Structures are given as C-alpha cells and as structure tokens.
Length: 340
Ligand SMILES: NC(=O)c1ccc[n+]([C@@H]2O[C@H](COP(=O)([O-])OP(=O)(O)OC[C@H]3O[C@@H](n4cnc5c(N)ncnc54)[C@H](O)[C@@H]3O)[C@@H](O)[C@H]2O)c1
Image (cartoon, rainbow, N blue to C red; front, side, top):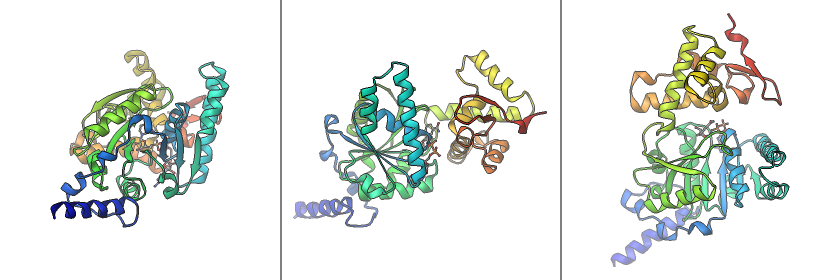
C-alpha cells in the first residue's frame, strides 16, 4: 500500500518534470525524494545548455564547445546570440593565430554550438544547464521554475551567480538536490578557477559530478559554502566598492588608483578597470545582495556606483564606464566625466 502511494507520488513528480504540470512546490521530503538514481555518469554528459549569452555566457559556451560538448546557447535577445557567436569565433581565431589551438579544433568547436531564443527547445535534451543570466533574484526565480518544468529529470541545474544563494535557487525548483553553483571567472577561457557552491540540499553525488566536469574542462574546482558572495565576491566586491569610494572622495584619479593597486599589490588589473570589465551593473547587483543578505552597512554600494549604473555607464559592454573604450580595440582612456 505504502509502495503504491510512493509510486504514485513519484509518477506525479515525473509528470511534473516532463512538463505535463505547471511548477508547484512539494513538501521538502518529497522534493528530496528526487531523481538522483537517474543521474548520469560523467561520461554520458553530452549536451550542455547555457542560458544567457552575455559576458559570461559566451565564454562558458566557448570552453564547453572546445572540449567536445554539444552546446545550446539560449538568450531572450537574438542580437545577443549573434554577438556571442561572433565573439566566440573571434576568440577562437585569436587562439589559432597564437598557436594555442589548431584550425580543426576551432572549426569543431564552432560546429558544436547552436543558438536559440526558445527556452523549451534549448532545454529538451540538456544533461546539464548552466544559468548565466542577469544577476537578479526575480529573473533567476522565473527561469529556475521554467528549467524545472522543461528539463529532463536527471538534468543538473547549475548557476553562474556571483552572489545569490544557491539554496534559494534550489528552492525555486522541485529538485533542490540537483541545483548547484558553478561560478566561472571572467574571462572564462583564460581563468582556471571555478568556485563550486553546494546549497543546503545539494546532493554530494551532484557536487562530485560537477567537480569531475570542471576537471574535464581542464579547470580547477574549489569549494565554497553557500554564503552571500561565496568567497570570490565577498572579498573582491568590497575592494572594488572601496576603490569607487576612493575616486568619489577625490583621493586619487582613475589611473592613479588602478596603478597603485597594480604596482603596489601586484594585481594584474586595477579595481576600476576590473569593475568596467565585470560590468558595473553586475558589481552593483552583487553589492546589493551582500548588503541585503549580510545586513551590514559596510556592504552598502557606493553612491557613485549606483549613479553610473543609472546613467547606463556599465563599462566595457557599453563602451563607457570609468574608462572610455575605443571600438574594436583594447585601447582605453579614463572617462572625461571625472576630469578635474
Ligand atoms: N561579468 C562577470 O565578470 C561575471 C563573473 C562571474 C559571474 N558572473 C555572473 O554571471 C551571470 C551573468 O553575468 P554577465 O556578466 O554575463 O551578464 P550580462 O548582462 O553580460 O549578460 C546577461 C545575458 O542574459 C540574458 N538574459 C537575461 N534574462 C534572460 C532570460 N530570462 N533568459 C535568457 N537570457 C536572459 C541577457 O539578454 C544577456 O545577454 C550573473 O549571474 C553574474 O553575476 C558575472
């Protein structure tokens, strides 16, 4: 009798996973009765779906495609998909010219990528989803509910979030045991680190699969616990925020602040150029999560950062932030907004 009941509950969840029912929350013990037994072996992972074709999405796609995975990239904007494909093609070409990869590797990587704006189509065959959309809880909530409906039961849902709780993202689904943080660093093809964050209910088998996958991408996984900003951004973002305060207080000019931190601390990039590179909107979102979730005044975003985002001066992606960027080249000069 009990078994029949359990089977019917499982069928109910299977139907939900197959998209026959809208997303609804089950009691936690049922949600934990997940589909871990269906979890695929690392060798069976073939299809990766990346959602979000922005700064991070295109780098993540490039890395998976270059390592032989079939990658579908999905964005709400067709133009962003076109830009992402062009960026990936340019990056791969640069790697060919530098003799890092062969022309054949480049061609194979490009053949491995398909693009779409249709979410359900993008998710149908996914073994692993990497979510890399805007750093906004509401947007991620809507997306994770959709991922839960459209992905097959065994699919693992990963997020590239910089700061948002993985436990919270898992709670938007009926498969919290299969939700995990896979935090790539920017630029993804160059940076070795991937921060791995388990939520409170993430299953250890899921974590081990993702760690193996990171090794398969020739990157280095390092685990962190599920706290706002994890390790990387809990330390990095307050430093960037303080650099913006330093500029706002007139302590030094843009280039001086960056040069002091590069030459004095042996940082490869100054904090203001790094903020532009990350995206000032992303920096602000991370500071807001740290401020709200930690509840401490020291994490309040600098008013100048808020003002820059309000003015849509987002850094490299809008060609103006603390620096102005000359189209198609790496040349930049400090923004004249801050000239004395
Ligand atoms: N920028 C960085 O240096 C960096 C580093 C590590 C992690 N991250 C994290 O990666 C994620 C993405 O950041 P980014 O810098 O690439 O952002 P971005 O603004 O460059 O790109 C976001 C992309 O997501 C798309 N998008 C938004 N909502 C969508 C939806 N519902 N479905 C499909 N596509 C959608 C947008 O059209 C855009 O192309 C964020 O969570 C961010 O915190 C960023």
